[in-house]
Image (tube, rainbow, N blue to C red):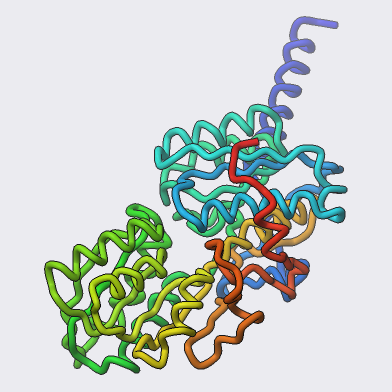
Length: 376
């Protein structure tokens, strides 16, 4: 064969490899909907696009790349992920399930995700430490056919499949609750979550879109409770010491700590919107008659199971929405029912909303609590 012919063949082969790599690096195809299991994987909006990855034979290697692990929600989330991975129907699809928590350092989390990609994991589910900075790992994941699924704290991109709840709407619901039971003026306390997190940001913006709207004349004090019971109790106690009185409260998490601070300060109970902790719901049930007109929305730790289920579905080649919003579980002082949406006999702290019947995801507290939050 002549040198010219050899050079041409080499060039053609090289071009073919480049085209193949470029096609792979483009990530999932954008296709027409509807997607698989539409009763579970509900598109976040009418304009949500649909993805389809090439079908890959199982069983799969899946990793959970968590960041912060310093509160009850995150601990329960990791335990839920492990419990889900051990269900017989899920275990059949898993060759390996790995968990790592990297703390609040975004670079450390991105490094862990890149490491999982390099190790050949098929999918990575993650609660992002930061809403930005994922472009490089998304490109690397696409180049190797890895499905990356952020959940809970969604990132600012439409290039990956995401699983969440409408955080802005949760803030709106909370603002409307305050309006309903406080009126259109007064002093409000807003106990925010983890700084830099899109969940905290979107709930805050939703809440303020209501309480800052004319003719409302609220004075709002903001503190940072880190979604943790102890932190929330401390910052609420500090706010009470400085400001003396509040007419209503919106707390994003650590809700039971916020209530305990009111009790310790002998502050009258006030209308309050908070998270789905079982202890908070117990407090509402006990003190509603005393003025704790409480609403409890649920950002469920069970989202991790939906994210894992979505990752497995995508790996099998099913059509999936780019962004999925799970319906927001909700209860208030009028609708709480012992043994149904809160559990008065259980003293251990946990979030009461863990069932997603349309997705076939249902857990009991013992199943979850039997697990540990340690890396594995």
